[in-house]
Image (cartoon, rainbow, N blue to C red; front, side, top):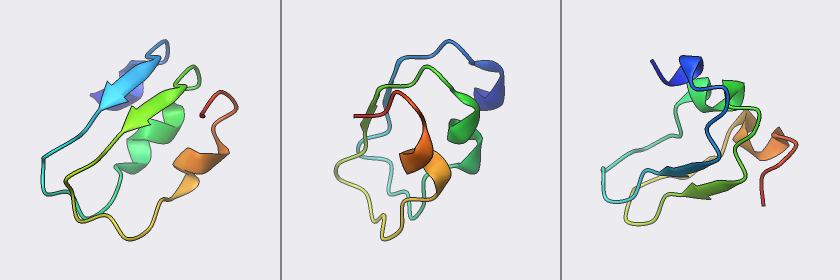
Length: 54
């Protein structure tokens, strides 16, 4: 239910063996910090277009 967290500002997805960032993260319009180390991510989708992301 990540798409319901519109006011989420920080998200730590580290160490989950993810191959992609869930597309629902893009609905978190206030997200400014995404930590995703220790995964197998090769492509960052629309998450990079979030207005507050650093």
